[in-house]
Length: 247
Length: 322
Image 1: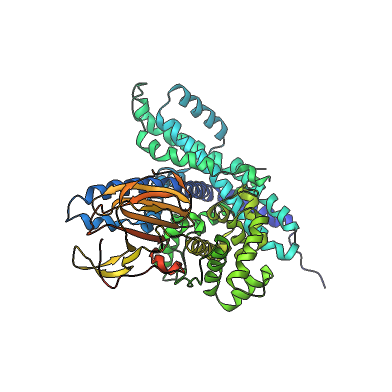
Image 2: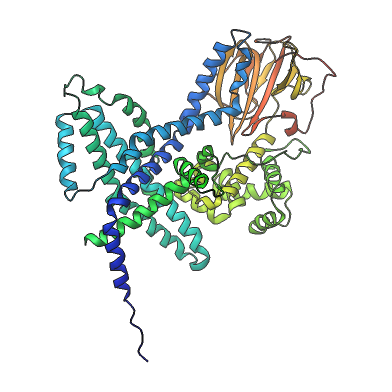
């Protein structure tokens, strides 16, 4: 009796690769958006302590103001010490959603080109010659949060594999999880994160070009967004423990 | 080559979407929206629980009453016992068996945490080790880069996968209660409680209001001491609370001292247990010299007397403050 022919594994892999190639236009923008969103959340989680201090200072000023009049005096109890954490987290959430609107959502408009490296070089050169706050701040913030996002995804993968496989393969799970996490971080930085920076450059360039370039006014182009994003970007760099994957 | 890269991109994209879908607030919003759209039941946690690595999710109800004045080690043992009391018997047995403990008493837990803290380098890592296991604590410590140093529970919890979220919340509860049990008293034991914690008729405004702390009657100028070491988060003046100091003791525990005559510390200052931080007074909305002493836990204000073995004397009636 003849044995039915089955495709070799390489054939299945090839079919999957062909399918992935056809669907790049769909999943790449989603991946960019998701990676940036993860990075923004990682950064927003880190700035919680700073926000808590700001809430304390704002609460003290608010109490000082409303306690002056008997009608508004009960408002002193509006934000007690227990609500500080709630308020700080609520501020972090709003900050995160605003940053997502500025950085993550536009990634859904990513259109891949064959000459991405060339496009990146051209736009970076243009940003050096005709700098605006927008041209500098958005790509920098995107790069920082994408790096933090890559590390966060790597850490999630490492923890999940480490504790998921430990029962089955013992101490080998540690090395395997670490290797997979490192590969994921490098892969994300090398294949996904830099595309996010390119797309941020493209968008920043297009929006900057809508305004006639004047060196004196260049600083103000995109300034409000930069004020929102730069603290998060710095927090994201702090939350990107690249070296921890090698420890 | 391009197809191989596409496959790699697809795998990486799946990882990104997994992380964003399950581990960010926007992902939670989308999951809730999809669940509503398709009439499915959503187990999405509240949006704000995505911050602080879940380490400040204070789950539990009433603390156990302390039997005696406790050292910080014994207090942490009682905190751990208090947290364990509220878990299922199977979970409790699993935690105790993993730690090699026959008894879940406060003393046994306190001793175990003390030994583990010596080994792991911090009480946070020791408590995490009790609730999540030694391997998880080691993993978190190494990845956080804290080595044998003292990373916060939040910092450690960030390194762990989400399957540990419930255990981390228990560890946070134990640390919170342990910190609260170890608090000292801001005034001499002889200071009388003139107005207790809870709902009462306001002595000035008349209506029934929630009193978020206790009032201790004392003469103006009495030294007010920090209940434990911590960081001064607020030292301010307003017409209701008067001159107040707020000290953050970590693990979600803070104490507030109101109606002082003079403040002796500034925001950002690190204070030690028993350090004089203010001189008591009659400032703000007050009917007489007293200290309003308030204990705050992550879920809200708590009665400071619940965490104290030796109860100060109470006045039968009276009231001096908001």
